[in-house]
Image 1 (cartoon, rainbow, N blue to C red):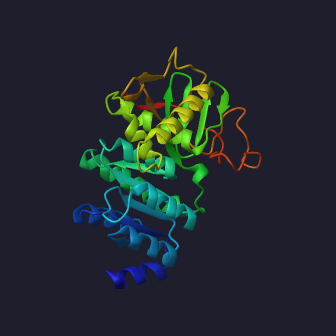
Image 2 (cartoon, one colour):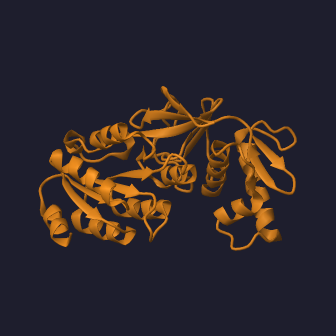
Image 3 (spheres, rainbow, N blue to C red):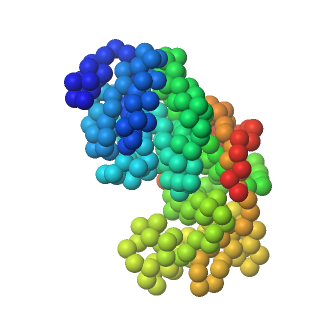
Length: 290
């Protein structure tokens, strides 16, 4: 493998780092990429991904969501600090939490392993088309998924939220809470426990201080979304248990090169917020997540 990696890294062909756990699936991806004239660099761990991204400067990184030595969202954040390359995540349809967290961390594309073999091959073939590498990678021009609920639109990759035509500025913590509520709704509308939310936000223990902090963040999130705990529209408090997102959520595929009316430009966005690219519009429905 090391010989192949050195060859690929020194090649003038567009370079792709591929990290997939299953040998057969990895070989299919490698064969499709090589058939399209790409230099494929196979690795089997998150550590090797980082090493090869530094060494080879690829235009695309394909990640299995089940790499043994790193959580996928954490690895994506590492990559975003190292490279402008596109990042595509391969995960099962049921792994909604990883899917949303990956987009939140900066993934550009998601490929569902639950597709039929024929459709999975077609998705991979489209991802690995050589003409997709003829221009420098620009995350703002990739197709990605956003989520809608009534007039609420959430773009995980762009870290943007709008209610109607108005942009809502959320802190990183508030955005993380919103994504956790979305994931729980997509997974059957289950109630998200307070302890699980507190741990997601980085607290070691769900003590009184951590619970009070969560309540403050939840109150701020509700206020910014335009609702009150006493008359919930989207977020219901289940006393003694946690919180539940009430309305169905739909997944929408958008072209990140387009922006929403009235969205702030990158130059005017506050560095204290998680807003970096133009808010995309709602386009055609590609699937219901609720």
